[in-house]
Length: 380
Image 1 (cartoon, helix red, strand yellow):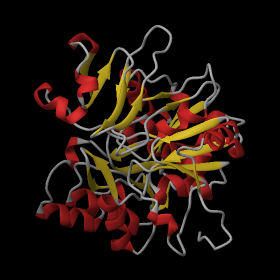
Image 2 (cartoon, rainbow, N blue to C red):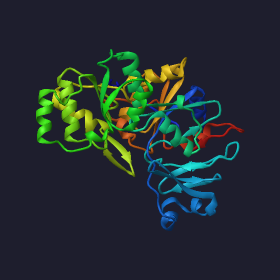
Image 3 (cartoon, rainbow, N blue to C red):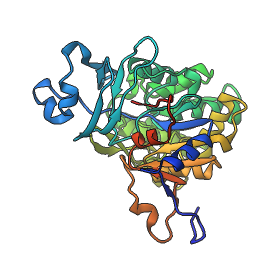
Image 4 (cartoon, helix red, strand yellow):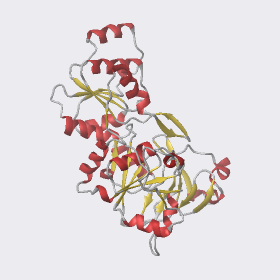
């Protein structure tokens, strides 16, 4: 889509309490994204890295918590952090039963926003984890949610294959370029698969493989779909097999088309660049994309939640080409861009900007100014 001069300019909510209150009151649900946290810093240099306000807490009030190789700093009591060199502004409020508060990377993604009476829906293009994996991750961060409030591209892929495509057995098997998250979601949906994390595919290409693939002897006759996601172990053999299946007529799907992904304070190759783009170049075919900004993911959200009204959902994100575009093209009630991540204000202020948010804030902590007395908001 493209914008025109008649498109309303995004409303800046920072230092605008009246506007913030009106913005919050418009929506029942806020959809946010999940991403990786920064790697840990040692206590030796944590004061400079995280700021004295955090490191002045007693040792038992702060600790590192690891989950699946990702690390965050955990606080067991609230603390106000101002001008923190890494995290900018964070405000923590204790909830009932005194759960821990979490410091996550605001530079890479908007922090979790919890407002009384509003629902948080988590969406992610990361197909390496299943919804159950993310539930475990969020539990470890003491972020309240249910599996039914988590929607990833692996889950939307399983929904699309099992409920939309409905391939007929026995030719209903999926060849996966991806990790265990895709396998878990396909298994739950009753969809057979091959490839993925199977150790027999984690090897180099041999001279014999060329002949076996060319003759069809190495191809599973039951495969009718190729699903390309983020694969940390992609190799020539996997790409050659996927290419052969597609040339044979298999349906081409992609969990997402992200060119990059943020991690450890930098950008790395995303699923689109690693798997689906090479296959598209080889075959001349474009995949059906099932993650943001594709509306297929939004369809999965609607089916999973049931009765949700798009006009009462606000998409919160830091990336125009996926998060904000997802909200705009999906007909959601609003989009809120947070300027602590990938995209910058200048990107939508240029003439002919492809997509613009409805609102934007310098940081999610700014929304606290729109809450009345007796209300609270958590940023994690």
